[in-house]
Structures are given as C-alpha cells and as structure tokens.
Image (cartoon, rainbow, N blue to C red; front, side):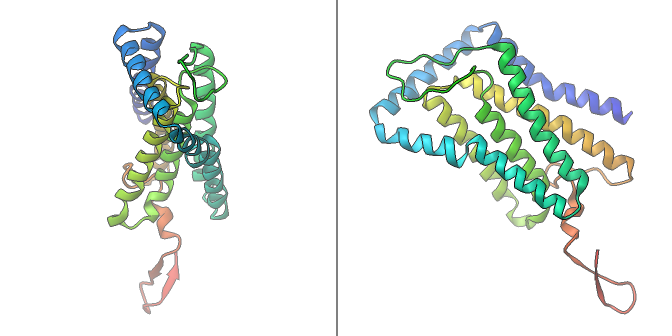
Length: 244
C-alpha cells in the first residue's frame, strides 16, 4: 500500500511538469503571448538601464547560479557523511543528480530554441526548456531546506523558506530579463524540479515507515531526528546528561 501510495503521489507531482511540457510543445497561444509579452517588457527595461545587466549577470552566475547551488549541496552531503547520516546524504546526492539528469533529458526531448531579441544583452548555449538555472535552484533549495530545517529554531524557520523562495524567483527573473529564457521555461524548471524532489522525498519517507519512524511534513524536514544528535538527554536515573 505504501508503494502504491508513493507511486500515485509521484505521478500527481509530475502532472504540472508534464502539462508545462505539453503546452510548450503544442505552442499554446496564451502561453506564447505570456512569453513574448514578458520577454519584451523585461528586455526593454534592461536596455534602458545598462548597469542592470551587470547586476543580473552577477546574480545569475555567482549568487544563485547552478555552480553555487551545486557546491552548497555538495558541502551538505560531505557534512552529512561526517555525521554518519548515510541515507540522508545519499538522498541529497541522488536528488541533485536526478534533477540534473531530468533537466538534460527534458531539454533534449523538447529542443526549444532560446529567445531571439533585438539588441541581445546575453547569450547562453543549449536548448531553452526547461531553465536549468531555475530547476537547479528549485532542487538545491529544496534539498537544503528538507535536510537543515530541523536544525533551525522553530520561530526562525520562516526565514530559510523565504530565502529559498527569493533565490528561486530571483534567478528565474534574471534569466528572463537577460533574454535567455522564456517565462514558461522557468515555470517548467520549477515544476520538474519539484516533481523530482517529491519523488525522492516520498521514497525516503517510505524507508522511514519501514524502520518504524513517524511520518514527517516538509515543515519538519525529512529527518527531524538529526537535530537530536547534538542535544544532551537527561538520563532516567541520576540526572546526568548523555549524548543521543
């Protein structure tokens, strides 16, 4: 029953990504109007403010770029291994690799051309759908949140969620503003990234059930017990503290 439930939930999570892919392939008129309207408007703003190009390039390549995001996940995996959190480290690594593979497969399946705008301010190789920057930010931020949120004090937990949303929306906006992606490209990146994270997180949750651990929610993180590793516990007799 758990396997069936996980499969159904994974399929449901994949529906938005599949729908975005179908609409892009079908060149749905409302979506094309949204893409062209947003591209023209943002491109005009960039042309009127040349300094903005440098800012956008810095944000998209350095602050929220794929290299930065993947390095953060790699550091996280190493840290988890140092704490002997083997399965959680494996989940983070597999999710990041699965996201990269899914994005590459989708790009080569759709083969969508990038925007061609007058007076381009940036260029990017490869196909356009889905946005690799948007998808990498989505999967990476989700991995970081689901692993590290148990370590954040409860009253401060909205802060990392806000930072993650800002990172994903920020890098997505830079890609459209620089004229290297359509709006539907970044939406597709969000949907596909969330689908990958959902599938792997559900598989991890099924493992937790198999070993008798309680189910969790995204607000709790994948492995709430990781926060207990450094907390002292009071012994039943003698009142002395001991590590968990």
